[in-house]
Amino acid sequence: MCATLCSLGHAKQIHCYIIRNAFLSEASLSNGLITVYSKCGVLDSCLRVFNKMPERDTVSWNALISAFGQHGKGKEAVNCFEAMQNESKCKPDLATFTALLSACSHSGLVNDGAHIFDLMLNTFGLKPQEDQFSCMLDLLGRAGHLDEAETVINSRHFQANSGSLWTLFSACASHNNLRLGRVVAELILKNEPDNPSVYVLLSNIYATAGQWDEAANVRKMLKSYGVTKQRGCSWIRC
View 1 (cartoon, rainbow, N blue to C red):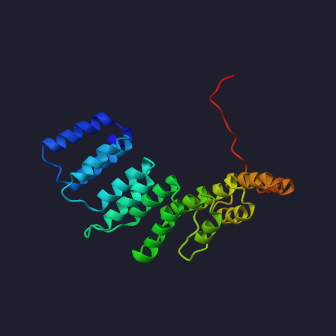
View 2 (cartoon, rainbow, N blue to C red):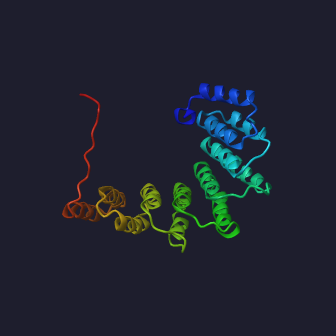
């Protein structure tokens, strides 16, 4: 609950209670403290708790990697993962790679992210799920590496889902990639044929590319299919 509320004061009280009652040997409690301190924005406390743990499990490493990622320290997250591999009892899982890829995405570490994704597949034999694909597409999309992102969605492991595809679709709009934007829009519409946002964003991509007729055609399709765009609203009084 302290993590949800980002209540640093309560987190410190609980930490003191854990120390007084000699509960620090309980990995689950220390893991929780790392998560709480991370969400409260106190990375130094995360590190102190982690370094004082007598034994660490995979969740412990995942919590610290996530903490680095949340604070924009992608390189430290990658270094933490490398140190984790020296722990024979701790094997990375899908949650580990989600945290790593997210950290790389927010720090712009494209090469590190691509290497980690390859390790997940070929070294650890883990099949990526929606979370990992979304992070990878976000990483490549933010950096404008849309050709590599297209390779990811064409891979045999990829299963088209709206969440990860929307990440790439937004990147296509940001980088004015009309060709790939059309491809991704078709894939999304297979799952969400009544989603007006797909038509609106695709129309905007056409308009940015100067293809006004195509932009108008997409708007007409929106009306002909009976799909309506939700009206915007404002709480500001005039």
